[in-house]
Image (cartoon, rainbow, N blue to C red):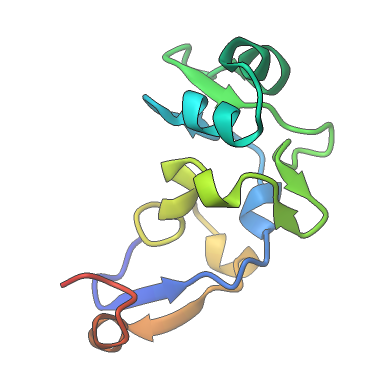
Amino acid sequence: MLDPETWYQCDRCTNCCKWPGDVRLEDGEVEEIAEFLNMETQAFIDKYTRLRTNRSGLSLIEKPNHECIMLDGSSCRINPVKPDQCRGFPNQWNFEGWQQVCHAKAIPIKQAIKDGLVKP
């Protein structure tokens, strides 16, 4: 559950990148990521995506150990253009038990606004 009085500052622990499930790609993200990787859009789709579990679009594929295909050691290969789903974790969405795996620092929302981490 999201706490409206708290902002969680990601410290890039990458634990969320190791959680199984769909990493949804929304409109425009496929093209942006493909361009960032210097790939043709169709080549990117063929190599790095699959049909979402609910069959309503594309998701990034996972490695056999359930890590995101874009996780390279302890960094994201596409961090500057990562999907909105990734950018929103854990403040816009999260999963049950996320606080046991995520190292994000809890910051009171008023302080996060003051520090420019969140727009009022």
